[in-house]
Length: 573
Image 1 (cartoon, rainbow, N blue to C red):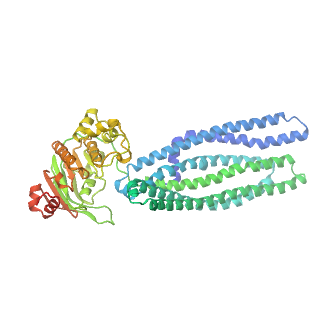
Image 2 (image 1 turned 90 degrees about the vertical axis):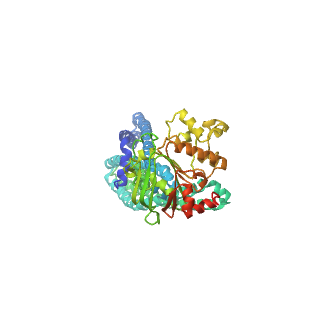
Image 3 (image 1 turned 30 degrees about the vertical axis):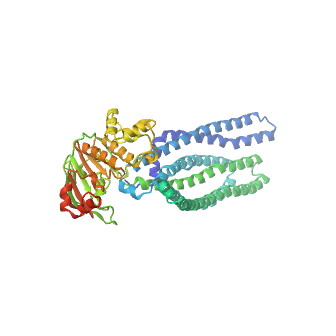
């Protein structure tokens, strides 16, 4: 992605709302113009009172200016707030779209809590930038210009006195802006870190409870919250200094104008009504000057937020495209001298892995932990890209497959068999939302989930809780398998599919796998060898290499590692 300046990114967010933004800006200017007329009308009221004339006309004009200014400003403010919400929505949509299209490798090194903070907190700051930082600032500039124009008419000497004070203190405020931006960026990073620490504790909630680690985790979150608090205070200090400087500018200007203006009135150089009107305009400058300072502060905050948002948007995403339907035809797989490592600073996981998986039937990957078995699945799904060698699916290099079509051809059941919050039906249809009721019933029956559905109070429409907490480990695995089968995959990948099943349910699942293998290609990773003793082909891996391939009986006689694994599980003497 092109490295764009933050203000260019802001323009991209604002552009779809430019018409409404323009209308809101015009209304704000009209409201400001009505307000600008008030000091001048007040002068006419004072003059009429001094001359003994009727004050009805000036008072009616003053009242009308107040009412018109209030109504128009209120509607303009509503349009600005609505536009701000629209900008936030657009930013969140864009950021979520990028987040869910990131490569798995990039998400693995990021913290979910910090990503959540960028979608919620950082995007919310954009609204403040738009309403207070840009629109109000533009309105304030025009209001300031109008007030100064009236002040020129009133008395040029007093205007010079006013501008001299404001420019000097305004320069001091400008020096504070970079400090405010740096402090705000650090504060937002601290909030993201606090979210990441809290997310870690919540994601492992039962482990925290079982380990008696509540106090320790509370301490970790509190420490992160304290750091966010301290950095937030730093922002408050610099922001308060900017606000105080603004207030001082107006107050000092008032004193200077009162002194010089009083002398000019005493000398007859100006009328008392003109001095009163000038002082009213001076106080009228408080609002636009405050808006300019607040806008500058908000803009600094927004730039900090945009930097964090841009960090995610600049990450490369996976190619998107329409997903074709899978026809269920079995495919073959070949790994040819594949080399892979998760990062340049990490050791290699695969050292020239080579093996074949014929179309149809059951092929198993076995071996000790750390042999690189699960990485085979990650490479097939293209969660990661291998450094060298060739991986083909259906005789075609996986890098030549459109990513959406490749994943549509695969059904993947992860080792921890994740189940999402929602109903059982929603979980089963997650990968195949267009599946028919008949397909759903068949998948439930094939994975032996009938008893579970019958036992649940609302059947398939029963909520299963956060991460499927209301289901047993074995039930979650069968739900994950049924979800994958509904996708009608050409290649079914099962990572430790029976690790949480008892002997009876393991036997049932072995029957399911055998049935599926008769229709499609099944590649299964198994530490429990009893699951795969009947496999058509078993690939034995060790230390990132393939050391043997064959049937169970062949490997028991030919490979020492496999024979040892089988012996420890009482499959051979």
